[in-house]
Image (cartoon, rainbow, N blue to C red; front, side):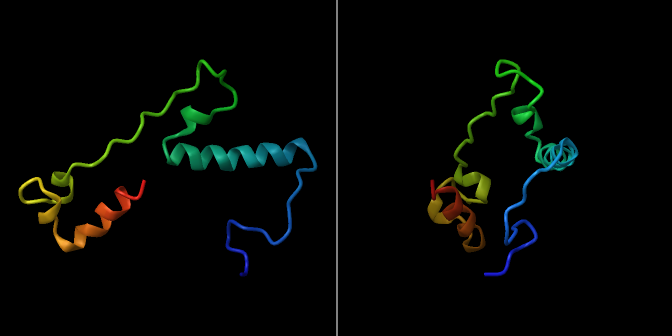
Length: 87
């Protein structure tokens, strides 16, 4: 399979501190956009790192159920239900 934009066909090695600084800028940008930087910021100690809240299971009403039952979730929303129940 040919590499995607996030994959490389050969390993990349950091050769200087500049490489690490550029890498950290990219990672911080992605993590900030995903609202998780406070959970992975390497400049913070373990006690300062924000612990993410565990996910909550969605209620059928969140998927447009008409009576709070999985049986009445519209068919176009059934995919979302299947995705949430995979874990």
